[in-house]
Image (cartoon, rainbow, N blue to C red; front, side, top):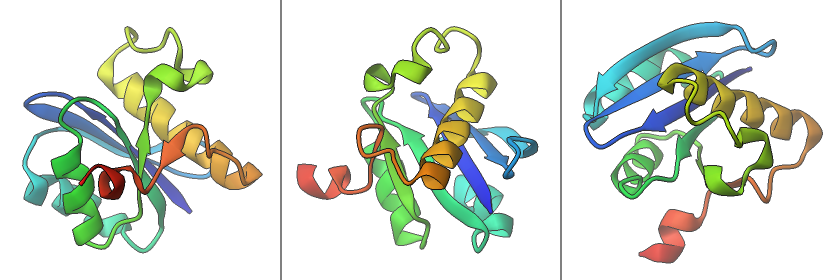
Length: 125
């Protein structure tokens, strides 16, 4: 099983793919271009438990696009995640890795309702 976290910014994103032991399999800063992000994630599509996207002001295009491309996507409200507190200033790569890590923990423990939402983009439309 693989896990992906995306630290989303206004014009670029850091996309990380990790394994069951939080080892980074792949990581890259990409322009905010859906085709490039989907292309980067494509080799792990069948192995990904989900992709977690940071819920910034511009998340909707990425979440909707990834869902349309067949990925399971979770939206993370990093302001509400205590485990994420204080990490925002440690670097974009660390932020993306932490999102993937939290996804792995939630999947393993069957929790995460407070951390992630897969329905938010649908509810806002």
